[in-house]
Picture (cartoon, one colour):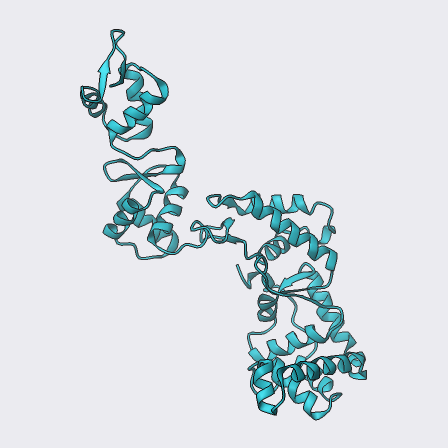
Length: 350
């Protein structure tokens, strides 16, 4: 979903390179060189670490940090900043129009795919006093915002959404958006659009979307698909009923454009406990209530749970668990090692 929310954004009316040039003119030579190296504003877009810059000038990384912080302070107080006010106001308007809180990389890419231009916009966000940076942590990606209270509420809502999900849950996007809005019901009406909500959701590192557009916990195999067995799970879940392994392979190729050999798909279905063989080559999901085992095992589990049952009752219940012929069930009932017939004509386990 990254990047897709910004396509309609207006082109900047100012040239970032010109703004940067005027700002740099307010700094002494070494401070300017440190800032350019630190933020990739020079001839190359490479951003150097404090340690790399320190080695370059034979100073400590802490001294580099001091120079950087002092330079930013000087810039914020400079006349060049005042002259560039319209550019900063325009950036603030854009951030607010996108929801007041935007993922850093997607936002920069939306403005330009040129790395130097992206670095220039990034630096303007850093030096602009209206913008606050949300550093990447276990829950969220790096982001920029202009409203601290709104950002706090969004992060809290994302946390609550995650806590409500289990590792196996998959939620349609419309349902997740509705739940998210319920947590933010009294926010400004201008932010209540699906586009902005999706953008806020994309900030989360805890919640993610799978290839079918369904949301769940990001670390879940239902979301972070890694191989044929994960694609098979999503394919069968989307189908909604048991599938033959050959059809599962075809569905994987259709839904995900992934090459799925029939034999490989079958092997993965056999190995994974999420799937249950319910007929000749037919597989269902265990979460649908199917139990593993042959027909005899299914009958035994039913009788242990329900008590003695008639033949017709057993056939009806087994057919909900297995796609087999009635005669197959009857033959298993006649196995005296496992089942016995009562005087009332019902069957129970031995």
